[in-house]
Length: 273
Image (cartoon, rainbow, N blue to C red; front, side, top):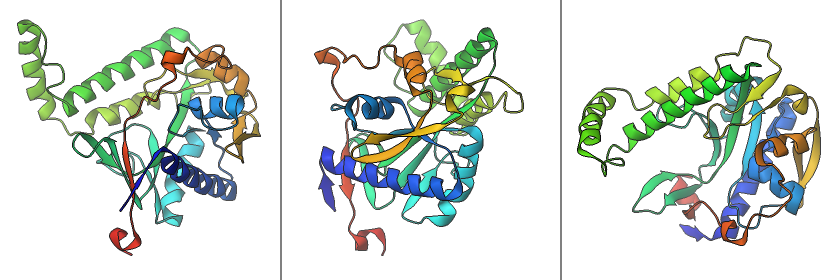
């Protein structure tokens, strides 16, 4: 088992992205590099120097098609979501390289997975802003309850009254399936799936991204680490809506990674081949 440094981690992430890119072209599935990855492409023509992950986005119809087909044609690379893996407790998707191991933050603590890229799904957002914010509030409530269920001792350092309330909450949460609130998040996100709205939003992650569908009516190619990947035709409006002046570098003290990890690449015999 080979331990990977940051550059090794990025190399694997780019290999995953290339597999996804080729698959989406073959099946006429629209996707785009998203969030910090898109900023990196526009501002740096690659990773933001202090970033260490890759994000892509899809509209719900493309996401569902991708979810249905991807694992049928791939063995080493797999798409995980709650819809195809009941033990996967994230409400959006990830494409993983199963010949790798990723610990966040390390072997002793946190989560064991594979090196992966995030696949964010964008659902119809109501045109009424109050209804949209209501969806975000419900999503945020479900996220807190899911966290309390998965990490029951996280909130213990508090007043006696709150400790008592959380004691009974823990008992209640233990009675629920671990994927209960993840499913609630997805149900909330899909609320307007059959409605003809003008906007889409990210209701399965922690962000509050909303944009007009017109921003995604066409896609262009942008450079990222010497390769070309899709970006929405309205990427500038999209990024400014989310981040403001995204071309301006943040203060030096904020130019740090938000992730801690240990990453490994498996030998073929360790992967059962």
